[in-house]
View 1 (tube, rainbow, N blue to C red):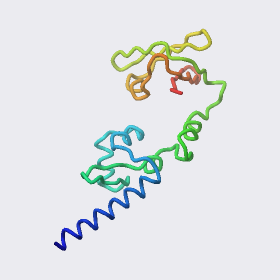
View 2: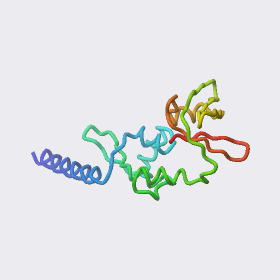
View 3: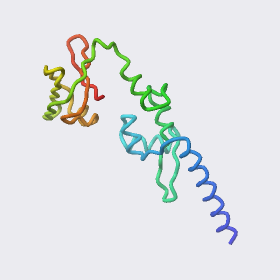
View 4: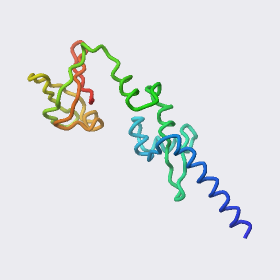
Length: 157
């Protein structure tokens, strides 16, 4: 009987802790957190077990990671909101960015060809297929061509 009451008390404390953390921000699945940090799922599991990143356990024993923990590990943590973080990422000379609509994304092996329509003109960039998949580039989306010297990079906006 004592063990059962003690377990219920611990579960209540765990629930309070989860609610406190959840009230401070969004809880992410480990896969979502790994994607934002651009690391693999096994790596984030190692970080959880090693204490590099804090997590909350669900009643079923699954890990959830507070958005603040992910932000703490990202270079863009200077912004408190998503909009501010996005603005910090795009803090590049305005004359080097051309914003337009994605017309076509062609994936072929390791490379992807992305064509943007900008003011009636077309600009094409060759990027890695992985980058195109991670940014989830699709025709009709808004994106920016970031021009640096002889390179043109695609930035989803």
